[in-house]
Length: 132
Image (cartoon, rainbow, N blue to C red; front, side):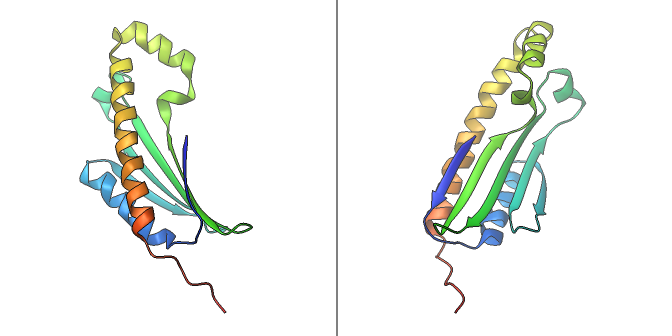
């Protein structure tokens, strides 16, 4: 998991839409959820029968929160699926002849590209003015 932070509050919805668009532009299926605490979570997923057969189902999850004490915006980026169960990934390595490891390496590259994009957007978004 990677954590990106900025010492001000920024508009979570604007950032979430930018992340959702980034996913959609790369043909990920997306979902956006908002918690009662104000956290916004954006999920990008690529799956299907062929991906499942090659153990190549992938998900990226981005969680955005404005926190106080100290005031800051925190963005967490993590991968879903393959990294949850190392033993299963080893089994798939044997079964698929290692193709899942290649896909996992590519997934890490995609995650790093997403992180770079999020850092850019976070830096460019204006700070929210606190309510009086």
